[in-house]
Image (cartoon, rainbow, N blue to C red; front, side, top):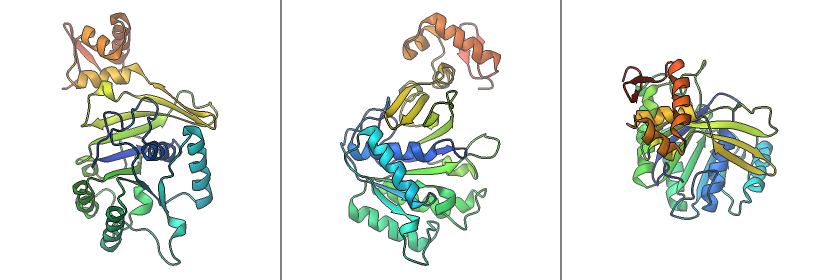
Length: 284
């Protein structure tokens, strides 16, 4: 999908409670199932892909309602596969930190030819893992590497830590990920329906201008998507090594005057500095 998601990737979507993690992940699931674009993200080159959505949190009725709403909004054709916690046999519950369950799910995914697995969410699906312990994460990490070797993309859905500042728990969790998306409440949160902003906090597969912040609005009438805050994109471009106003303006599709105005706003907040004619990230 777009320039940022490739076959066999390990990625994460995280946000505070109620911001839109499940909306975003279900939108991605439907678009990949259809081999269709999503907002500003182009469809993948491989066409429609088999997706398995593992839901460990929502109740079944709400999951079905949300799925139908997204299929209507995107005019979806294919139906992603779902493995839902309420449909497990009596007495069973998800614990993907358990070696037996890990083997079972991996075998089913490979046998069924699934190309994308979405795990929603880590807190509900993985039990007995000390969330703040980096060494404990190896219970999951070694298993996730096996999906990569099988060329299966895995998307982890997770919560943001209290007070912001990144995904909750051990920092080692993000080390092997190709990309990480943070969702935040949109400035247009009074809009009816799901409204949020997506921003990449990590992206190994492409440069910042190929994965800019995006504002999303999801209603029964469809999905609206437009480029988000130019300041976030400007900062990412500088972090990627673009430090001249002219080249940044060309990358952003803005005038030099517009870039200078955004840069001044970033410098006032301490997120950018300027030495001579070059912008820089403070402390870099």
